[in-house]
Image 1 (cartoon, rainbow, N blue to C red):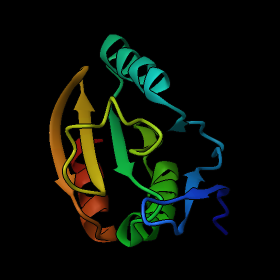
Image 2 (cartoon, one colour):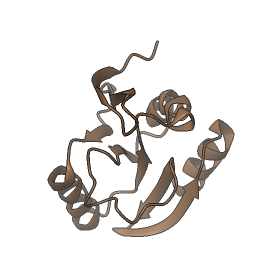
Image 3 (cartoon, rainbow, N blue to C red):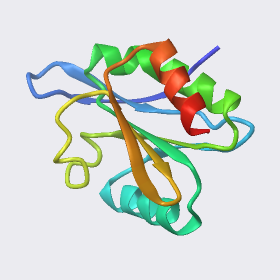
Length: 133
């Protein structure tokens, strides 16, 4: 069963927003960016190690983001050679300021961004991961 760690804060309209943190899987190929500096470190690691990676940009108040997050976590176990990163755009405002849609998935190979996917869809995400694994 997927259980995520939650941190409650207030959203823009005064409603409660829940910040998602992914649990660690046994392959240890999934992580949550905790802020702009941490996300910059992750980018640096992706560029220097040239490890294939996917970054899921979401936000706690987005219904589609919350629906795809458990699938993202499960797929990290199915594709152990890929690094999976979740970045909440509210937690990383400087680094993610040019993103226009959530969720956005960016795919990296050999240290370079090679693909991008907007929106949800479990099968779409699976197929894109299969393509880049």
